[in-house]
Length: 264
Image 1 (cartoon, helix red, strand yellow):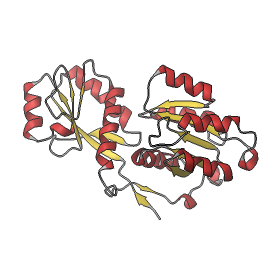
Image 2 (image 1 turned 60 degrees about the horizontal axis):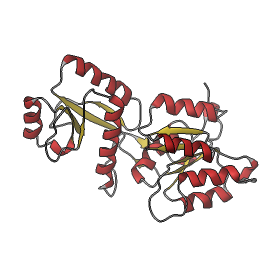
Image 3 (image 1 turned 135 degrees about the horizontal axis):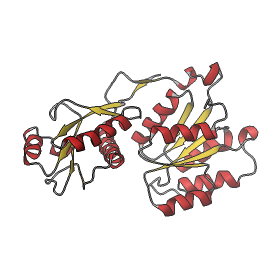
Image 4 (image 1 turned 45 degrees about the vertical axis):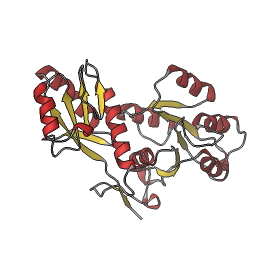
């Protein structure tokens, strides 16, 4: 059964100089080819989110008048109470993407079911990989339901058959009985589990036998940007280390490196 998942969101701009608007234009170029995708909206009232110049009284008034403070990322020295996020200058598109992903996850987590859109994720049984070959099986482990849905949608869109789980116990049970080509793991899985994502990775790398005879490649996907976590990932034996929000070029480069069936 297909499930409809929102994958495209609009972001309005309030204020900013021409130079900063050009910088933000690069943000939209970064955001339009990823999942979720962010494109420039027309107004603060109608867009899903807002990015506002925190040092511009006119921009602050416009956001207040639209009653969108709680949906706005303010950039500058000051942000009003209740702001969704506050970032200092200079403008960094990657940080904006990260904040938007966090805001979106928090918003969708409040919903029992995501609202319908024109993006439909196909049933895994209907998927085929490159050149009409059967889709490769991929396991995704993340405690965030929303993060799982976005990564599942992106991988299925590339022709993979995705199995999504939220706990290390679920992942270990599947890995013990079913062969996977790739395994994507978040580091921090929350809850009371004994293993985090790196523990799952380490277990796979130390295991001598695997279903199907081949060990899966392990990709760490985490919101942590600390160098210590990257070192821990290397020590655990991960084959690739990606940080959220996922940048499309880095994501595709990792797939090309780890999946021998994917065309370069």
